[in-house]
Length: 282
Length: 165
Image (cartoon, each protein chain N blue to C red):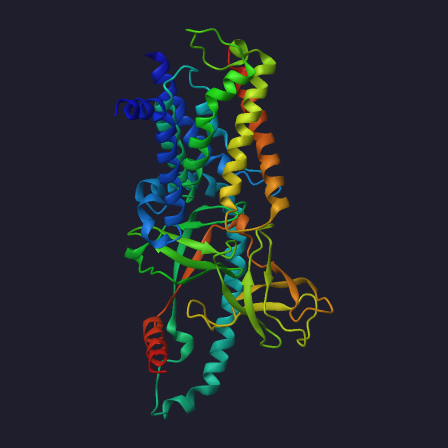
């Protein structure tokens, strides 16, 4: 007994070391269930509050670029309004006598604008923190876009903040397609460069050319169809391969990201329920 | 007593500097210095080891909370803290009963540089390997470890050489 106690005292530091390492490691492993750890991540309100404060300083330097972007977007939107008004005026007589009125699919989406208060591009697992949370109507699995294209998907939500898994994270898997030919595949980030990602599951019979535009496919309920993701920068295929290796230049510059929109798909729950029901019936 | 206060301040300062400034450095996409390890490196040599480990754990966890990498920094920092005394003994000969704070003056220039290089390399290697855990890109990993360690080492040596005794 005495020996045992002596042994424990002699190696107490080693035991402490092992215990602390085991705690850390179990934290790493548990962190895979990302939603549960809101408290110990940057959507925790104290940490986020500080990031918000630090961001308000940095943001000042990005104002010019943001302004340019906004004015560009403004013009594009105005052009769209004019186009749509023209179309509307030609269609009006038909709509007025239609009995089967319903909300068209294009109007099921609402946007919640938010600001990026923390983000990284140089890790293997990158995350983005936004300054809007459950109070502003953000829910898990909503899509996030910027004026340039797709950013990522909301993964954790607290009362006032939320954390997004961007394309720049191997855990994200966003379904994309070619704007030209409608062939779809999954977009995966390889961890090397924040400007590029790779597109998988494109079979060898598909015709490609450099610069082809890639957009969201609309198969995941987080994003509507047709939001730009990037362009083909390079593609390779070996004789023995069945699938292309495609390098995509992302249209969003994650390094200068500051204002984003969260997509609120109004029929999300209904679609999910319906899909679940049909799976159960099979 | 002033040493304790000084260390508390340096703890807070290093954590804030790490998460607000250094985590935003993304030079070439590879380099991300982790200067906060300086806190562990400058604690007095004869500090009780259990206390050193606990401090390392708290330090790592604070960094983790800010950078969404729960557990990784804690693991690496505790790891490097555990091997600190052995490495100090390896590179210096401190007389029994002395309790110096590691610096150029107490360790000698070459001893101190070796101590910093080895400690930073261990820390960065552990950290980046953990980060890449589910993810195999060996050469990227090695480049990241070496480049980031180099920057951290230069930063630490720079800061320490400015410090007057």
